[in-house]
Image 1 (cartoon, rainbow, N blue to C red):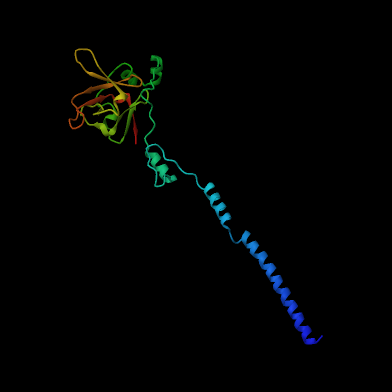
Image 2 (tube, rainbow, N blue to C red; image 1 turned 30 degrees about the horizontal axis):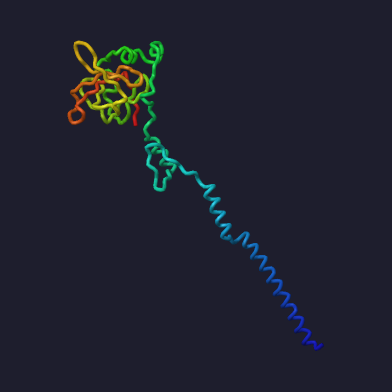
Length: 222
């Protein structure tokens, strides 16, 4: 064979083999890239599902707290709103009935005298008379919610005064028999004596004055 032709044939053979090698190696690189460097639609979908499934849990709102748009409440807002949320108070229908000894053990002497013996504290003796901070007034005997600061006003009598309870079902009003006809106010849950209601309250509101014994109540600030 002519030497020139032999050289050309050898060069052609080398070139064909090289192209075949490069093609095979490139195909393997593409396959490897599909597994490592490139993500198919199926892999992307699986990755998205995994991110959702393993993502942060949805925070549900507490009672009385409005959710953020989308129904999700962020942790910071949940904590802040939780601090301002209304405490859980007992249902007035859940009656509390204790023996006299149990009441004596449970209450201070002054609270027992008022709540269980229908006594009356001295005027201007209770720190609750001057409370103006937003909050809730509850029965000192059983925790029943009675009044809110928003219905409290300064009657000048020396006893905490309100123009309305939180709801009619939280208190019991009974007419007392005697020379002076008065309307007694008692706790609807434990039947403790709280005070009396008079018809000389703020006319722009209810016209009523719930004259309460401070020692018969507890105050919780908002």
